[in-house]
Image (spheres, rainbow, N blue to C red):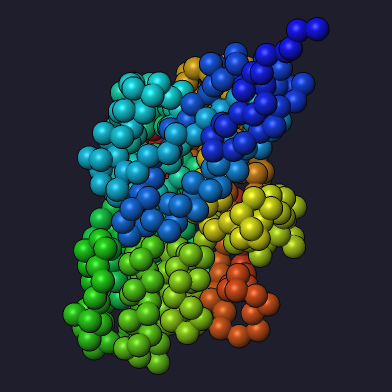
Length: 413
């Protein structure tokens, strides 16, 4: 009897960083490998947002693993191509162009910063490649930057700041100071707060701007304290949020002023600790503690815990998962991998991957979704991840978005 030759591809396969054991369902594995769906994933693995970016990668890899373990689409598996955009618009555009022209990706999901997502979108839009952004931005949905291939999985600043303002402004006073990261994210958040606060008679005492990636806020805090605001809004992100919250606490701002932030990051809270963030209130797209009430949150958390040694997904990590899941579901729905047909299918998608119902608004492809209002805990924490109290959840509602007409879209009945 002749010996059956060994075929390494029949024993195991590495796809998207995940080892899959050979099985009858993967019999035609060589063909599946050759026709792999490729998703480019540019995120800032280095820089001020690296912690959040790494969590996005982990969650995106989980989505790829689940897709491949289920056999993909008609045996067609998926590969995730992660690239470091270094939090730089030029670098983001270069990496995206390489992903499309050299690596031949089918789709792009990613971007963690308003500083990079418009440059990524410019590249993908010109080449008619679907891009699902997982970073906050108001501009990406506006008609001047939008296309059939442009989708926005994340919350946007208008939604986020509006929800936090509606909850917090009536409770803590009328006089507001903004400490703002001086780029699109910070500017758009301030605009969202001021727009929501106008109807409540809120008074902006100052918009104090700092450079992205600032380490020292000592030059700004005396001025803020001298203005005697009722509310200080930290319109910044990642390491900037962590540093400014810690230094504002050390400076004694909390003794007279309520500190709020549009996005209260799970990762920043873990890094900063309970004292620095004690009493800070903010919004978020997701908090793992919602799992007691939302079945899809429990499902994601359990899968993430199993994959990553008991860790739970962060807010921005969950966006990495959802951004991938949405695109891959649209592949199934379209029964295709070309961006035009998948984009048309994605426009129709109604889904619940991790936080409750979501859908993309037709005119601008913004994901309509809930906003969670949380406050940092400093006592009675069950474990290291039990860092927030959920104060309220603003339900998905198109009325909380800017109108399609305001954003430059022509709407026909």
